[in-house]
Image (cartoon, rainbow, N blue to C red):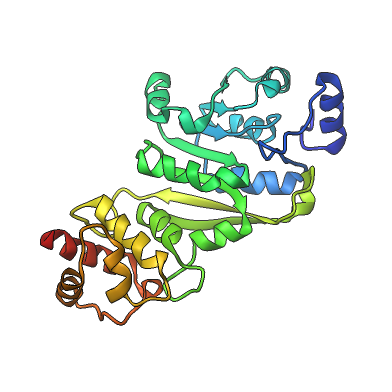
Length: 284
C-alpha cells in the first residue's frame, strides 16, 4: 500500500471516517521523492531507534521502520490510532504512543524502551514547531539529531547567521544546542490538504559540546532575549532589560568581554553572547 498516494489517503479517510484537523495542523505528504529525502536525511542506521512526532497515517513511519531497529511514533490524535494499526500492521518494530509530545517525558520513554542511537523525526504543525524543538533541546533529550519539517520562514530563522535581519533569539538558541543542515525544500503542492506556506526540512545535529561554555545558562539566554527583544537598540541599552542588570554592569561587562557597547544583538556570535553573559554573571 502506497500511503503517500492521494487515492490511498482518500480510501483511508472514507474507510475510517477520518477528517483533517485544522487545529492539529494535519497535512499529509504525497510525494515519494520528498519522503525519501527526509528519511535519507535523518541518517538512520540498523541499530538506531527513531522517535517520530506526528506520524499521520504512517507514510514516513513505514519507511523509517525499513532502516531502523525500532520506531516509536508519538501521535496526539486518537482518531489516527486505529488507522496506524492498519497501515503499519506488517511491521513488528513499530510502537505507536497516543500522547501529547509537549507533555511527554521523552527521556523516560527512551530509557523504558532501551533505545540507543536515537534519531528524532517529525512533520510538525507549524504553530508548535518551536516549542517542540526547544523542549527537546532544553530537556537535553538523549538523541543524536532532530530531522524536522517546518515552515520555511521558521527554518530560515533557525539557520540564519549573525548580521542577517532574520538572525534572532531562535537562531542563537537552536545553534547553541545544534549544528544545522538543510535536507530539502518542500513545496506546498505536495501536501493533502495543501497548506498556505512552503516548508523546509532541517537536520539539527545535537552537539556533544556547546560552542561556548557559559557560567549560567539561564542568564545567557536572558541576555540573548534582552538583546533581540529591543534589536534596534545598542547593547548598552538593550542589555539593561535583564533583571538585576543596570547600566554600570553592562558597561563593565562589555568592556571586559572586549565588545563595543554601540553594537546590536544581531551582529553578535553565540561565543560573544557567551562572553557577555559570563561577565555579567561575575558582577551580579
